[in-house]
Length: 330
Image (cartoon, rainbow, N blue to C red; front, side, top):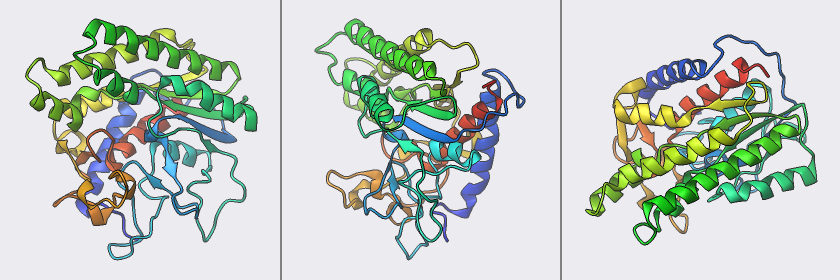
């Protein structure tokens, strides 16, 4: 099987994983203090945590760079290029139904992905309700939550018709709603891995918006909105250090953007997926593979498209999540 990136990118992945683990340890802990063993993993949030089983063969696609069987065989290899939620699931020996392919599938996996494309903070309650209806969350469950980017982008789209102070109030309300839903999950006894939303202001989307508009620094505005979402989220969660493990994804993204070359990410401004080659309508990175990358596309790219993390970035994010899962005193 061929991994989608060039061999030269493997060192970048390893370096990113080590740096991410160090960043996670800096958020508290640093040594394994918990023997918690999840019996099920449930993922809530947006498409950064989503696998889509397009062909109904339990070999789904991701909103990142998808691995294929080889450079000539475009069949997906969903276990390669794992999303952050897959990285966490692996430490517990768990798989999701959307990535449980032949020839050795796990019988009736109980882990669930409730995350959805385009999901915002207001969608979390319904996702949780759906899970509670199928199988109530409890003490043996690990839950992941990542949402907020779509809130920031949707609110930003109203600028300048809606003022920045009004947008800030709305994004803070979205952050608080996310925090309330995280508390709701934690109250079930489930353990929660909660990631802050990315700094949207350093995405290729933000860079393009800065270039296209002269009224204000649009990228800086997106950074401010992202920061207010995260601040409101963090001030709302009941974080006693034992029920919720906080992953500072925003700090990882901001650090890589500020220091190009950090952890091997030498391209932090461009998308590695060539969406002009997409077969989806509208064009989507769901069919981004080694066969549809830009010229010289490699593991050194941090972004898959203008707003979604590449496979390498998801790998670094996964290392953060694993460190938090293993070091948090659950």
